[in-house]
Image 1 (cartoon, each protein chain N blue to C red):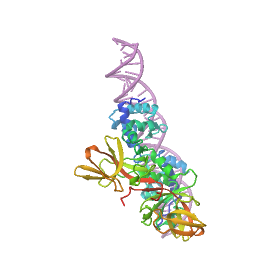
Image 2: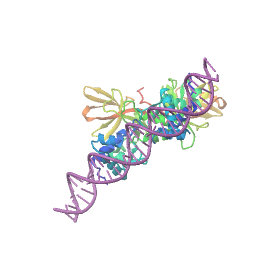
Image 3: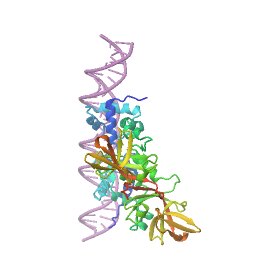
Image 4: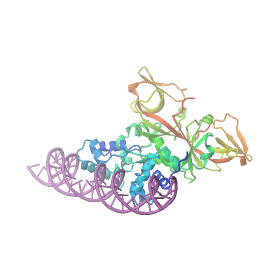
Length: 210
Length: 210
DNA sequence: CTAGACATCAAACAATTGTTTGGTTTATAG
DNA sequence: CTATAAACCAAACAATTGTTTGATGTCTAG
């Protein structure tokens, strides 16, 4: 069921993809009209509605400059090049190029829960035991009360030390365990540890063999 | 030279920090006024100008809803305690928020060499031995002739199979080795293997213990 | 005490912008 | 040929929004 997308709509979709990052503001309807060579803002309005009901994009209420491509929208524009067909179902799935820079950032840095996310870069090899090495990036979601078993960023000793460990709760105590498990755990009363957030992604170069 | 920031301005700055992410739109001046308990939009306008000339934020021209915290702005509100200063030199380095969605994507998806990069999502657990699991994302840089020891995406059997392995060259043959090394290597004449590219990043949730 | 800077307010203005209305053109199904 | 739907246009409307104007209270330096 490959829906045939009107060329003008595809053009609009691509434009929005390019201009809907966190960087600039999304274009207004009139700006879109100009960019895709349509003389009436209404025509864009018309296409935008079509695109929205077809599930290619969403808008916040009907507020200015708030189009956002849906997954379907991203798929429609990315043509799925190179490895797409070849890899499908064989252990790898292509996730497109170019425009995807935006959606990658969106996927990594925006949470459905509305909680903020931020990045931490690992300095030094103090967490090598947890398979987290110098230079790796951690995507952390703010969460002061993450579920048991989550990998958390915790402040110890009045904030003098920061660690990344897996969290367990026991009888009013917090147990912080290095991810690979074979070190002695750190156990402390809950009031001595401030949980900053939860690690949701680890980004690193391909691992050297161990 | 720690500049003393007016409490109202600090409040505004914090509000903007929270609402200037990838998620919603930044608040309008009147929305800010309401949120920080000021009755006149002009007062916010006034503070915003102060903040801008002082270098805490920038606005796109003077367009609606386009405040962006500068580095100085982020510093001012985080007191930079939390993860910033504390973490410095202690295992973690804060890498800002918000704006960074952009630069994150840029860092991951643009190569200095000018070669294209794309994403692959791993389907299934066929590469579990290489510490690459179902759902992980691979950032791949196009490179038909990567250096020895690189982790590459290779097509085997006329493109019928795709694998991710570490590449070695030996006497006109290619040796593809699973990253963890303890499986038998795949050795094939160079003409039977098409190297698609080189894995530059692996993105995955924090690893469960093994 | 007084002048001036600062913070605040209310009201009005003008630009931007999504939307509505009503119409035209064009291709196609009946 | 005709009716219909899709694509498009121009113009006007109303809401949102940054900005301007003019004024008031408060604190502090001189």
